[in-house]
Image 1 (cartoon, rainbow, N blue to C red):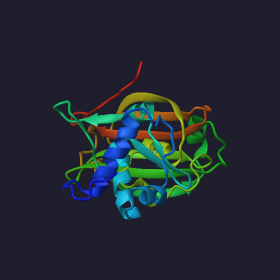
Image 2: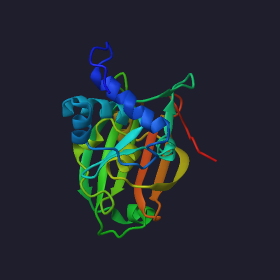
Image 3: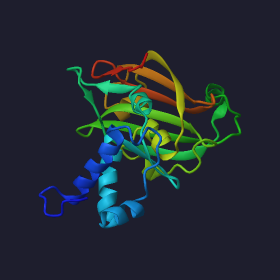
Image 4: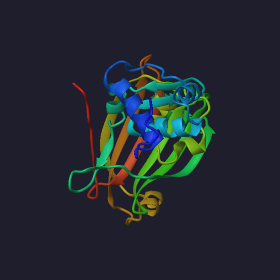
Length: 239
């Protein structure tokens, strides 16, 4: 099955085999692929080699993992949904930016956040504060409140350089249904000016995003704050 004398590395040959299954439709969206141990036995290679092939496909968006359940073929709509709020540079080119996590804790949401998320003030949420960076320059403040009843064991390391949507879909297997995005503006207060390295009073663009699951539960409320003349957000919506 594998050409062991080929110049193509074994993990890449395995990736090509898996991609063929996906692209041909033999493995449909939502299909659970064989385990790493089963594939290693099939190809007569180590599980490390198989893991590398699968990781490549996870990173490309063709597969996603659910912790404790397995690896599945990705759904097109999930990939599109993950782009609902993205950033373009000044030339209109979409870019991906690393995140720096500033704060991660479990809290009670407080009255205003509880009302937005349609939960009780005594319920628990993850509060996450992150900064998007462009060549070490802070460009976006991202504050998020995530419903702990839906995301039960989120960890600090889960957040590093990952979009929340990808975590919800690929790690927890949530089916996201709808996101409402509200756009507004404000002037920078001291805390925002310090984080974004701009003068107090600088004009900022605000985007509030509320995301619901297929059961109409609010899974997250996020507020994105950026300098309005540096970058622009865009929405990608399937019609």
